[in-house]
Image (cartoon, helix red, strand yellow):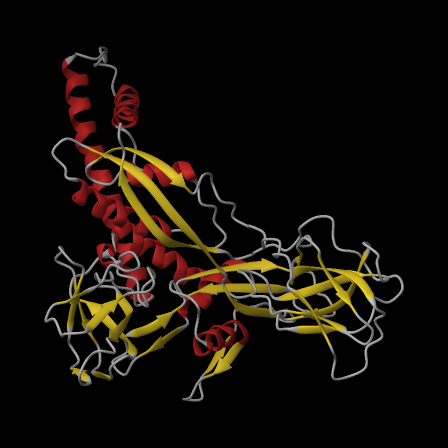
Length: 486
């Protein structure tokens, strides 16, 4: 740490006073003190410049050692859905490089491959923006304009999350953060190194450009069970979800260690003896509704575009397992150019970092004649269901009732699993006509038939919800931006 001007001047006064007794006035304003102070200023500047040069030299050496260079800006790549009206008279073929845009903007994307589409059909094609920066990350349903219109052919981006995120040019601070990440990856066996190491997993095209990559990771420790004998879960996210099985497998290989196609062995990042399972991070979609008050001189259309960009950027910067702060969300919108004030209707409050799976809806029951024997007697039965995952179980749904005649069984219709749920537990009356429920079966949510009562001593539905959503990624769903009245 360089000395301050005062420290240098004090040292010079001390040295001079011990070397000579002829100078007696070292007070500020004296001739000798004025000379000392001026020299101290020059010395302090030289010390600071020397330290800055040494520090930058060290950083440059580390960048070269780690083979790091400032990353340039890139444009987003989206998976676009093209649809051709059934009334079209013939198929349409579009060449690679077909241009698509956000209406009334300068943002354009070009398809990476050619495609042919028949009337009444649709195809998915990736397209990369010709502009660069985070501004190229746009809300769902924004990319809708064919630069060269084709009768009956429409296009949109179904998701707000791009396949590859657009980014700005890397700053010096971001480069230093990248250096810290590289250093973190040099060692193995702890949470920091594992989370950093798995970020190297990526799928590349023939030119070496990423087509899908891990952009966020979060390790969560776990107490092994018979069903899941793991010590930790590594949640990984590609920024667009769901993650492909190929990238998920590559991320698991990075964690465990593997030998590549060239026979080179790569050491894993997990500690020896630890079982760490890589899973796709669950996405919790958040619908947003805000009313903004434009500043004087700004049109609502302009402000809506700026606010949309600000909201998309806010969601893109949320880490896995990070809460959505309604205060920070409001500040992000207020920072958008042209916004004087904002009223957030949805979400109504902050969202937790680790939410819980919602309680299931009431199951749909049908009395049916089985193809195999049933032991259920004629009468009325209640059935309720819960959702389960590795972290726990939700509370039970509202019970549904069904009345059987002799020889019938209970058919429970299929149930769609929500974000974070991995299975369904079925609870039914412990005796005909009883409202007391016991666990009778478990499943994946597909249609199931119940043919017998719960066994004696079967557990009851839980009293509290323990089905956590670990490694959660909040993503932007629908977006409504209106004008505030005051």
